[in-house]
Length: 207
Image (cartoon, rainbow, N blue to C red; front, side):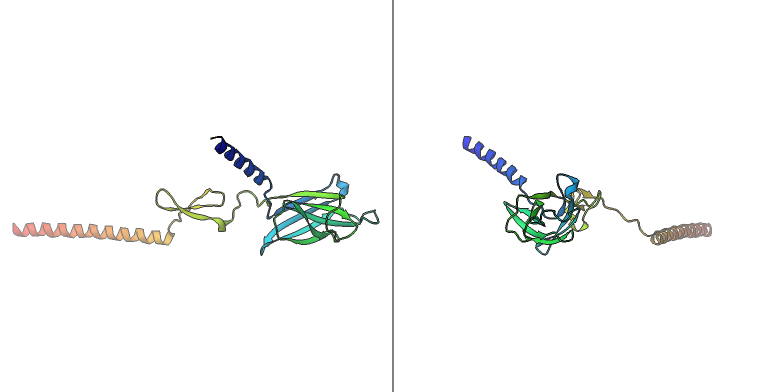
């Protein structure tokens, strides 16, 4: 019993630990420093053809005053390692990451191609989910499932039932149906009148 309880607790803690290190895929990153004087950068990551394509633009990253540490290099936190994305040139950067990452940071370097980041970090930021706005959902992710009444209902990516809109029949079709119904009723009334007259005449003849 104790071993079983220990296994359950250990599994739960392992699940929590794993949840904390889940890497982001598509998202946006806002990089900032300790003060506004350090500058700011904005990046977006989009998953395309098996890689994460990253575009970054910066404001306020002026030329460093240090004659040696004068290169701004962007890094990504990928699992337990740091991956260099490249040097910020004229406030811009385009890079590619094959693995998921959870944050970006910028360091001051003496070389634009260092093998590992220095301790001179000036900006950093975490990946955040892309906000597509309220009420927006991807119609390509709508699933179809049978309901308890036997009819199919649509379920969107949030698990909510998509309302089914019943289209009203066209006005022209409705008018045609009404006209046919009136014609049938009118013909039935005429038939009743004819049968009644013929019956009345037959009775007078027999008298």
